[in-house]
Length: 226
Ligand code: ZN
Image (cartoon, protein in one colour):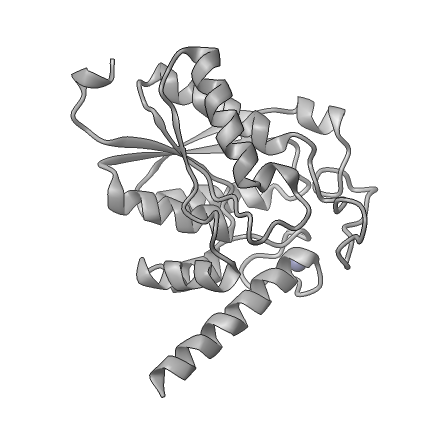
């Protein structure tokens, strides 16, 4: 199936946040055709999907949105439920309540089915072990394990590619700058757990991580410039 095509194609799992947006533009540089795959899993902040669409429009990338309402039914969490407040401090012994159990496994599995139907083997995701944040399905060992499982499940040579796996947030800012989309990522992505675009609410763990990374990146740049 793949041999019939000469075009290099990839599917990017795309939320419209800092990481997946950086991956989208990373992929655009390397592939002839990139398809963004977004998921509607009952996020409290519909704005996330609106942001994702706007970024795809600007990037000239085709976007598909898959609806997976079951996830919210199965695993209540602070990203989908209005009655669960997002932790402001990272949890010590337990995963944060923004963890959506099994989310990356399901999203990547759906992405694989979506990709195989189109004869595409390369699936790109913005997970990072460096910014682990207590999410077990962001770890490299999990991605490698799932890759093997998907290959066996569908008898297809998928390649799950994780450009950010070993990058911290400052490195990710640096990468977006290299790709020429630093401003776009800064202004138009939505990473905040409270649904505030760009720099966000400033209080949730996601905003804190993003901001600390930005400050570190700017410091590094200034030091290099001296
Ligand atoms: Zn926030």
